Image (cartoon, rainbow, N blue to C red):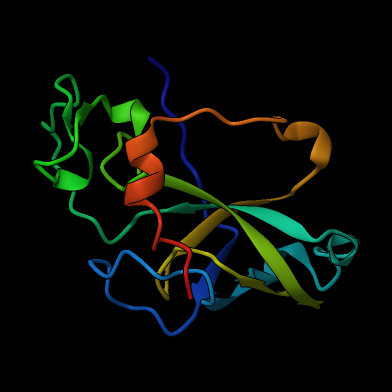
Length: 157
């Protein structure tokens, strides 16, 4: 299978540095500074949107070249949760370590985008930004009941 090289477009700055502290992201304010190679106007127009999808790399999590993703594992490593395949979760244990979160836009100024609710620690490389558009969102989302229980504190302040 063909491989691709991805060069980050920017970096996250916020007060969160502990990758093991996984809940309470709802009030986290992050500033994404886009690399100067994109120019001062690269975010122009984004201020008209309420939300942005941030694609980032889980670069702080260890990866093993021989990691086996074939067997389902308990979600979040918790024995009380059902085993899930690698593509049935959103955590950092993934083949390409890519994360994505839809965040509220607080401000856009030059190459700096300030968002609320980004679940990425300070220093995280950002690989892309996409404005959130209603037409790309499903009307209804279905998920197992235990997911709602488990995620109840994830985006709380």
